[in-house]
Image 1 (cartoon, one colour):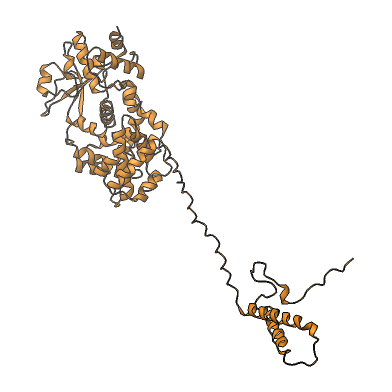
Image 2: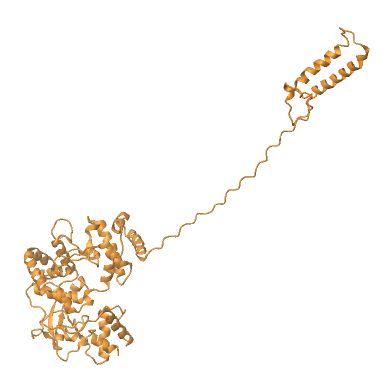
Length: 482
């Protein structure tokens, strides 16, 4: 077996496989460095003969010389430069990834109450209320179901007037009022001297509003007013008072937890609404602050300021109980129908004791809180001033009667139709719808038997030849339903 070829060593063994030159004459290799020398040596050998060469070897010598010459030429001639390697292909610029917009999550749906608060924030900002004040007042605010329920069932309208007066002018309240009248007489007389409002009227309002400061309300005033303001029949009232309460919080040194109120947003011992506070609140004890919650002097002085500015007539009574003749035209008995005292005398109206009506320079009205079957009252201008405090005739009558009792004067002598069945809210609404169906406009059928409903009732009664006292009753509802 033949032996494997010996491994070659040296630079000539490293051949660039991409080269186009012969590996035996590659420029720069050992051969290119030594072959010219061999060729020159071979050429020189023709002239220097150290040993004679036989003639038979001359052709080989000539061939070697030519081979050396060719190899020298090959080494001398540089090979054509190899083309530079083509640069790697430049990839096209990467296209930016398509930008996929992030979908904006839909705004949460606001509740009516949340929309109300947003509207109030803008309104408050427009009135100069600072943002931190608004946040302090509304933090954690939510509608109060108890306020909504109370708004639909005010005692002045839902209960018969005699039941309302029974609780408002109770024996216990009369006694407490007399005690406080004596206890605070110096302060009350000082207030009366400046305002003209009698002490017993102020004490009666104090008793009616908060049972002489005992029951001032436990609602957060902002929550109560926001509940009224965001929807319902008193929305306009609630919004106005809400903004006024914010102003009080900003301008006075109160804190939110201190500002407790009734369900209707009235506060303090004499139950001022925020707008009333801003107009009439006064410092009654001289300490430089106004605190209707804790200072009875501030509360009573503020109440007197309100009544005085609303036109209270000093040394005049609110009115009194009267009797009407049998042939009295009941359509004339309305708080808005005013006549001189002399005219009422001519129509046969007398005091409850049977005496002639005392002279008086102002006009007066006849009020029948329970219709022709109940007591009758002659109302003078100061009664209308009490209405400025609370615009419900039954409330003003309760204040007037309580004041009389506290001062030691007699109470109501006429009798109430207590056997009459009170109408429920649904029945009151049905009564209003019945008037509307008969062609008489009572306003919205909301179950609130106010002045408009009374006027429509009176007109309907007159058209039917009935006693036109304007007093809605279950008996009349039966007639309307036929």
